[in-house]
Image (cartoon, rainbow, N blue to C red):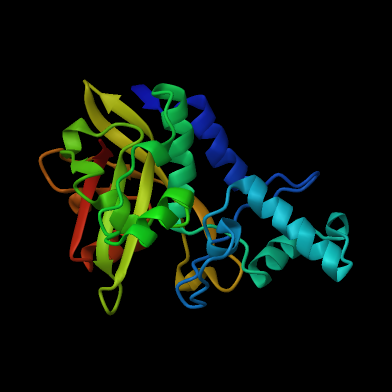
Length: 250
């Protein structure tokens, strides 16, 4: 099989989330979403939108205030420390920084310069978004027709997004995953490798975060949910949503 991947800087960004920049540690980034805490106007790292370095730096600041030596913590203890201090990334925050690394490499542009925020209606809101684009970029922003367009399965490429809208028991959750790598067989996609930030109930309090999974394409003429997902729970999550689609940034 031949394969295509994201650019090396984008792959490096994913790897930094999988192994946060703490010296001599191997700790992956937890999942965190401020939906329940409803924190407003905070630093991006405190609302699930930080880079790996943001998260590590903020943990160090917390530890200095609390007089805790992070170097003395085991990997498991450090992961718990991050979760207990609400340090992690939500799905759109993670995808934003990976996409940004990809665009800066392939198009010499930052994501903030090409994203539209059509939900912003008044001048104050528009100004805040201009100053804080990462903090205001959610799944609905990435999914909006001004920012991305639908792609058929046979045309999928690294950097494309799998977007799930209106999922969960109340159909009020959105989710986004980014395609990391595609393996092809006779020019058609055979295996999709994707990565995302998510928390399943089975993950417990501390086992969640950045995940790397794959989808085996059985028939490109069928929809995405009819393929063979390695991550069966995400497939079921998608089945219960109002929509699941592949979209490409414009």
